[in-house]
Length: 250
Length: 250
DNA sequence: CGCCCATTTGACAGCTTTCAAATCGCGTGG
DNA sequence: CCACGCGATTTGAAAGCTGTCAAATGGGCG
Image (cartoon, rainbow over all chains, first blue to last red; front, side, top):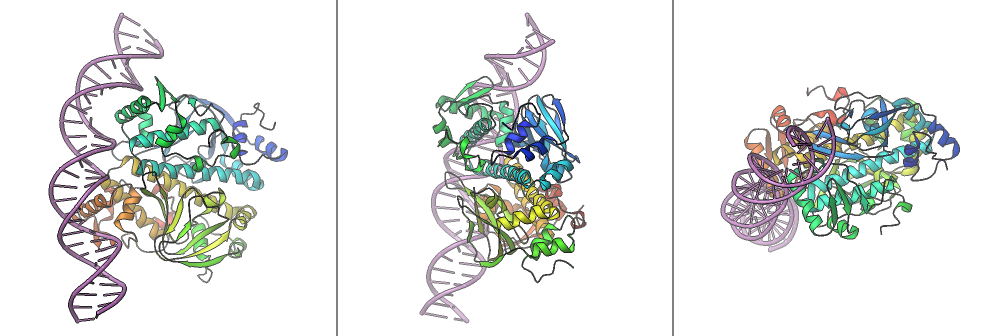
């Protein structure tokens, strides 16, 4: 098994290989990347809007999110990240960060110098292609979110992100898509879907009442996957998950 | 001047070089890409959701847009593309398209086989990096649009996209940011900002009345750039434009 | 036990949508 | 050159989804 859990880079390896496995040499090259492991508390900023980053950050455990703050002070969450995700490739390659990245929970992360990552990508096309692909999947999720906040009503919008989180968590090996913990407050969920916390609360209640989800305090479980996916106008295509991770669904 | 207008690939070259100019050899390699020029009528689908593309498409003239259709039939426009933009790198690299790309106006485009593009990117890191960067800028714009439709009111939202279009048009060499033609109907603009055409109409009227824009039939001119940018909560950072294209602004 | 933050709930306001109908612009045909 | 027709723009009135404001409830932690 090439993704030994001994290396802190193992989650990145696992994520990048979801398309095709690397050979031993590529595997070793990736593991040889210079890196620094760090533990971060919940709420820590990994990147601030305007920062000039020179390293990328890989999530090992915990959750983080990207967000922007608009003129009136409202916050919009742009993405949620979990184990294996490369979270600030985008900011570091573009020079100046155009948004914030903050930990949602306590996290372990690995920092990798941007230039080392860039060099690896071009020396080893298999790895470079996997990283590029990963960037494109991030973009695909951004697009779905634009449609989600732009054209779906509250109920559909929330059901949709719940389905997305479920599948991504499962793909990252963090649980079953039908039963997982939502690591965010209703206010944070509201910032994901562009609604108010009050309205998210009311909408979650109706999803619960209708038997689509089960709630316990700060956690959500999918009670009826099919119904939730239908309610959320959800299809998994845009996540571009490898087929072997979609077996359970359709 | 390396970007001779003789080649149909010149707009792509110009776009990719906005960061740093290529050397003669890279320039020649890009021009040597296999390609096919095509004229498309307004409304033609370049990619349909679900398609398996094997070539990418570069815009030479005209405008195109990406969009998704949600469950209730509503459409959300995800991106607008113009001269020099690589419009379906994303779909072709990911295998199956997760959204549609359609021409907004009559267009000239160039098709390039995905594999030739991929090979070039890895053989010539300067070009590969430029393409990667371009992908990341697309992503940055997606993120801004999430915040735009998620957290801004109608007036701010519309003013924001008008500012973005103005700057991107100017950066692409298609006019002055203070005076340009909007190549879309109010209904299409509504699908960009996640509003109804009726409300877009009312809002444009107030922007006009307040002296921020001037309208004539289907065209929009910026009457007061500074006021429009303020009204739209617009700053250009997320476009990651090269400094030499920002001289006029701030 | 008490504080604090998150959740929940209610009443009301408001931005945006919906539904229709009128007007306008412009290409087409007489 | 003018009438016609169709799509886009405008406008009005009313409904509705979501937001705002406030207060109550609940759970976790020192």
